[in-house]
Image (cartoon, rainbow, N blue to C red):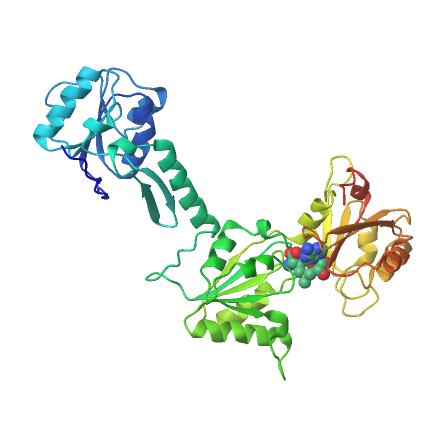
Length: 410
Ligand SMILES: C[S@@+](CC[C@H](N)C(=O)[O-])C[C@H]1O[C@@H](n2cnc3c(N)ncnc32)[C@H](O)[C@@H]1O
């Protein structure tokens, strides 16, 4: 028989008889997908692995505990021949041919009339990879191609935008602290499918360079806001682009709901009737200390950590932070947006009982190539920030956890 390429097809097996001969490792690997396809599965085999036996016990398959007999394939739509008895396999193959039942053979791909592709799933799509001809069959290679495609679709490095089922609207995506590897898989995929990306200054800006040329990238800091507040201008830009039927990603640093105004944006979109999905991100409040070798909790040292904003000084009437109470906590204090006000913050904490020699670390531009860590104490931090010229963005960690780990090489 001349060698032609295999013809790929998806079998809809729901309620249809599939006969599996042999209850060993091959059956164990293949049965879950057949069960998931809703097939009416009959296993013919004197023995089975414990996993296959469990499928029979659970009623997912019917198990005939005996060797193959002629006639077993008579009413099958599809057969998987995988016994260790070559004679039985050959006889079953012949029967399948007689009854025009497509059959897979685990021992002899050449003698089979069907091949099982390497399959994987991503977002409602099944990826199935087959080698073209029997002589070129290399299951590890097809599995590697399957893995590469599925991984790529999951993490967005393979761009396959939806067309018919595309959902215009806005995704508020937490981009993580800055390292492009620290965005979530879902965030990265949505970014790869976006028509418009409105990005903050913080977050994984390197990812923007990878976007295809047709994607409009807007710097949130540069949106003109005339008589509007900046946030209102950003909300309006999100709404306007979404109303044009585009997929809009609002790429934010860290997590959208940690000092990220995520809910304000979501509320504005909801009021405008725009669908919005929120993708969590790795917050700098935990990851940036971690990147600099500081755990926010440590057994026997800190049983709590508190994240606060230091964007207004403790004596500012707009401050919602109860600094005197924070001074009494024994755990870790993580301050975001606090570089400018750290002198006042340290002074207030000490005035309300925190020890002046409490360790403090400032981690600037954490997880990026420019990451730097500066250590001080509450008594010295104001002067250290000046002397070392620490600049935002930085996460400030106050507490004994600062000194528990080895200092990573800078
Ligand atoms: C407006 S807040 C946004 C926080 C963000 N939503 C999060 O969850 O990380 C900005 C502050 O986060 C901190 N920050 C964010 N990314 C940082 C980074 N890579 N290195 C140091 N600090 C960072 C700084 O304190 C900065 O002033």
